[in-house]
Length: 146
Image (cartoon, rainbow, N blue to C red; front, side):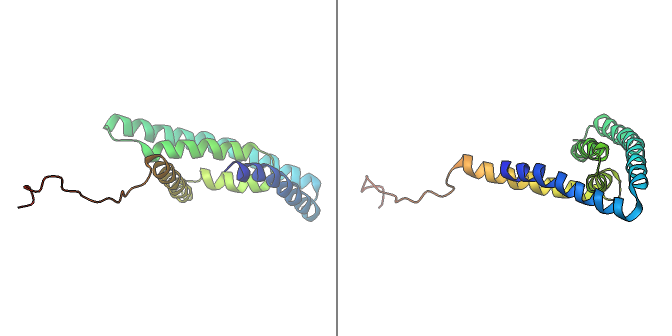
């Protein structure tokens, strides 16, 4: 897992620079900077709006007495999506927007749930040890078998 994270920290900036250069060559450098600034401003507005909505849903779930699991996941995705939107680059902006928009957030929530479930099952299996213990029943008392 650490190797994947290290590889991501290495490859994402390289990919972002490549996309920035390609977009800059296609539309010009000033339009590219304007587009990046516009995405950041739009992202900041969207983060505020979605965090407010998520916070309201979280409070409503707590007041009704039910476990706010999806609301907590949504709040985490809003924070991560907002962070990605504030990071300069088009690739991180696309992923950040997808995590913020209410239409695409359930897809990310399902992916997050699948990832966490798989990790917890792997760790529980490693912690619990073997599930089946093979053995043989030995009857020491011959009178019990009659």
